[in-house]
Image (cartoon, rainbow, N blue to C red):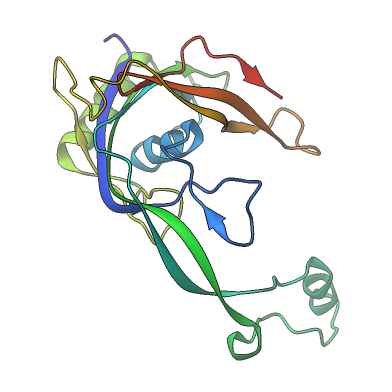
Length: 220
């Protein structure tokens, strides 16, 4: 597999929020590439490397359930922080009693995926960094179950278990489904312009349980 890895991830719940439905959150049918990248970065990240997601295998059938969660309806304003920094009396907290609100979310249940990915070296790699070193560290962390912080499926409330996938042939829940089109899905965020971070989308097509991202068209 060269500098690539296959990582099995699974959990009880997942919420890969659709950006067009912000108030009442509704999950995409499957994991997004950006969520997959976030999981790998939680396990191992280094400024000298960049994870690139190649394929996502959908191991379990797609099931949704509706839940209601207590959330707050506002955020601490940046102007309040600046005012407090300058000696003002603006509050630097949110009173949950006053701001609490119940919101419904449509989430996925009993999810399991295999993430197939590789990494590329970046200009921030130093003289002692090399692909073999990074690959060995990642494999060791996967086998030991080590991570920088607990990976999660879209929201921190929904932790993701992980392990090295050593299956030669990966079976999916959709081996007998030739093709399923999920429409436009969030691919990742474009950070090339720090003043104007923008979303990127792609047309998510699953073929026999596999979403192949290697040659997909990214829409900005």
